[in-house]
Structures are given as structure tokens and as C-alpha cells.
Amino acid sequence: MRALNHPDISAVSLPSVLNALADEIRLTVVRQLAEAGGVVCGQFDVPVSMSTLSHHLKVLREAGLLRVTPEGSFRRHELRLSEMEARFPGVLSSILQASS
Image (tube, rainbow, N blue to C red):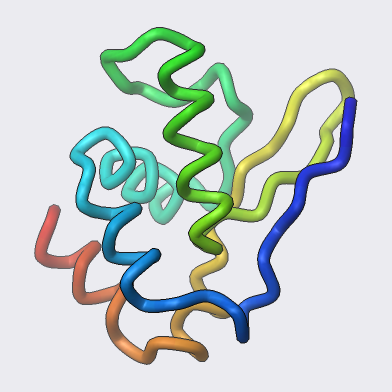
């Protein structure tokens, strides 16, 4: 399994975060991660194919919202909530609260 690039939180821009969260599927993924703490790739409850989900996860990771770590033959996805809150105080928590 190849290593994935995670942007340094200081390089993450607010427009890229907001753009990533503008899609309903990606917002659903972020809500599920916020509730569960971490989700293995095949366990997301979204109405899209695995390849489409993979694309959405990549967009979220490249925007700096997710941390992906290998877990056996799977990948675990976790929301970088504390890092996002430090970088953009209140933004992600407000979006999650408003989208519930």
C-alpha cells in the first residue's frame, strides 16, 4: 500500500476546505467521521460506488480535512478536527452543526 500525502495544516487554505465541503457526499463523509472518530474505507454509508467514494476521500484528504492511515489491508480515515479548529477556529464545527 503506497503512502499518501497529507498537506501540512499551515498550507491548508480556507477556500480549498470550503470547496471540498461544498459537495453533499463529501459533507456526509465528514459528518460520519465526526460522529465515529474514524472509519475504514468500505464502511462509509454513502450512495455512491467505491471508485466515486475513493475520489471524494482524495479530495477531502488533499484539502487537509482527513488523515488516512494504513490499518492492515485497509485504510482508516480520520477527521483532522483539532488541527482544523486550530487553523480555522469554529469553521468546521459550525458547518457540521448547521448540516446536521
